[in-house]
Image 1 (cartoon, one colour):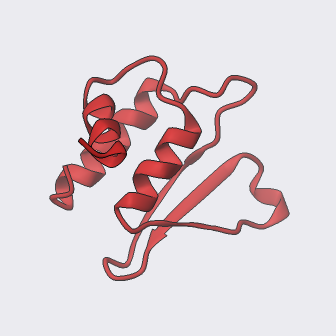
Image 2 (cartoon, rainbow, N blue to C red; image 1 turned 90 degrees about the horizontal axis):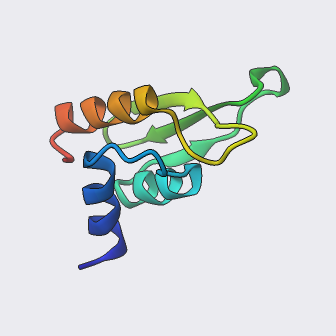
Length: 85
């Protein structure tokens, strides 16, 4: 099983320890690219998929590395709507 498949399975379990770096790896596997944000964006990050013309935006966790449950749920819903999960 590939790392991408393992991360998809982990995401669907809504774990408390899903990190930002794992999300970056997962979204890149789906074809998303992290977009540069202006200085005033704070901890907000945006991932863009050119072929789908789709954006995923959320706040980078700090000081912890784990993403909040509501962010995981939002991303799961978005990816399911795009038939990626």
